[in-house]
Length: 134
Image (cartoon, rainbow, N blue to C red; front, side, top):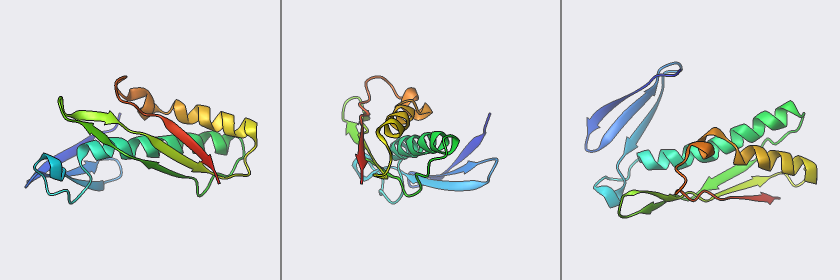
């Protein structure tokens, strides 16, 4: 169990603290929802959590199998639904080292598709993952 706390700072800004590490994240409402868009929005954090979780899950499998995927990259684009206001889609692109063999690629791609954040998304949120080997 991990406790995180949040304090509303005014002007739609919140400060979040991860209690075990004391690391802090600040959020803001997006411009299209009455905010200033100066920081990650709460829904941006969902997309960031997804791409980070995918890379972390792949890294766990890679390290277990003695593979080096350092420098792997991910990007995600968040698209909102207007009514009801919620996340519509989070397509992810993962760029991996080209030297990985087909069986290694398959194992890592399978791990990515089963990361905890991906598994926690509502079924109506489209979250396809595209893999690029470069």
